[in-house]
Length: 199
Image 1: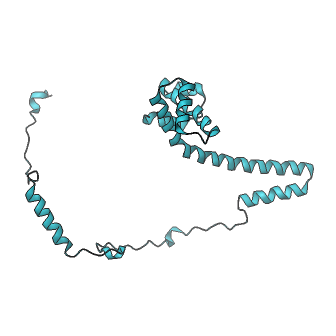
Image 2: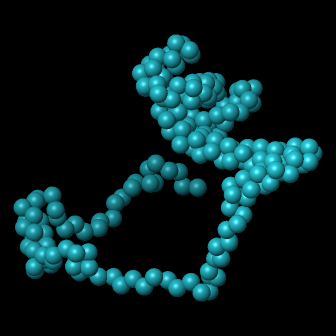
Image 3: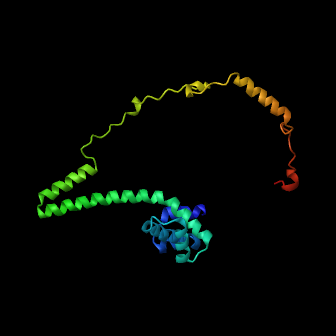
């Protein structure tokens, strides 16, 4: 799953095929179209196992097993994002349905249905609740933090003579290892005049 493919799926999963083919290379456009189809299949078969997804993707799109596994990973990555946007869409649609119900009841002069639709709308959008007032920025008080290396503030017992133990371990392992050496900076001759013409 190349980063370009996952980004394309995230941005254009439900974009028209013609537009996809103009916007992306053929392999990416094909992948987006496969992931779109398999996302719909996944929603229709939520209890299906990964193996069923792979079999369906291979038989439906005539692709290799690694490509099908890549499609599965892409769809699973996108599912939380798509379900969140789907939830937002259903919220919006619910509001539209309630408003339409209210309008139809108003045209029929059906006060009872109007009242029910208005009550449902108010309850759903929490119209009866007071808005939470934000604290003005100039009245915000930052939480005071004090830096400490005392582990007792976390409920841990301090190690006695910790700094001395650290120093002795550093000395011990530095002495045992030949790889640790103090080195000094030295100028390197890059022989630039041999490789680059002087302009």
